[in-house]
Image (tube, rainbow, N blue to C red; front, side, top):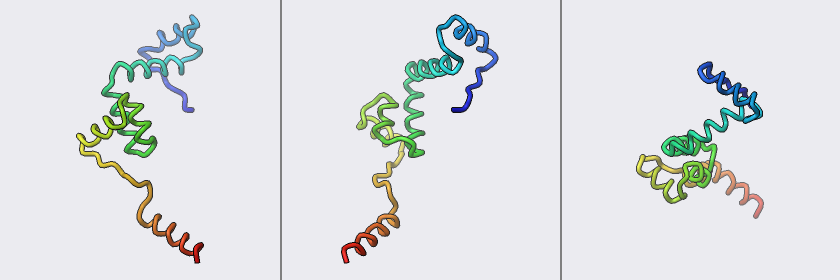
Length: 107
């Protein structure tokens, strides 16, 4: 994992939290801060979920979970934003190739 740079503005506070043993290291402080931010700002959770879903990094179920809504609600959010969902995961060309391969096996 890439090292997380703590902004100079918060360096002293982060170092203090680590030195008093509240967190084992800077990375844990930053992770907790981001986790708290996303819990507090639900709109950010939705934005992150949409972006990751659009980049096909997470499934629609995981995106809904990340956004803190049901799958149906997440689909509605996508619809309101005019975001089309790809229903199948493979292109027609890939599917045709698979069908041809199966036809060869059957013969």
